[in-house]
Length: 143
Image 1 (cartoon, rainbow, N blue to C red):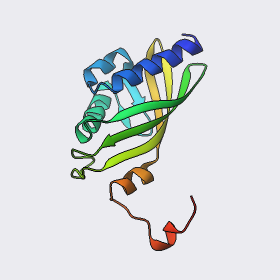
Image 2 (tube, one colour):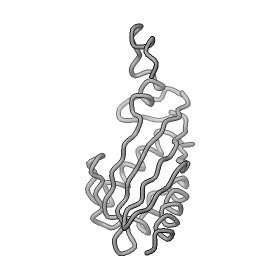
Image 3 (tube, rainbow, N blue to C red):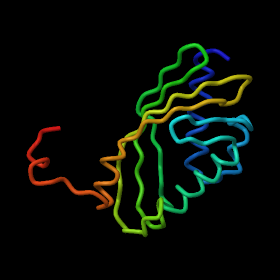
């Protein structure tokens, strides 16, 4: 696939992710897909992870802000928004709105995603959910 085809493939993936139907992921991910950061092994593991996300936030949405392709890899910077309405990693629903950023790198082989790496602003997410709070001293720092 060309670089533009790879980027279009990822844009289509994000459209499907926002439909909240893990069964639609078969078209995009190889059965042996690995996300190294999230420690997900295989398509079924990924589907379970996505189901957990969708159950935690019925309005979860991922919006692409930047996309770069090089060789068989695509880098995506995206914004995630939603409302915490269901259990999330054992945290009961808070009803709080969330907005945070992530960057994912995907490797494509034979028209499917075979590897991924994801870095998210988890500190920001956990702060919005009230799981962690800045100390008085930390709140004075200009990040």
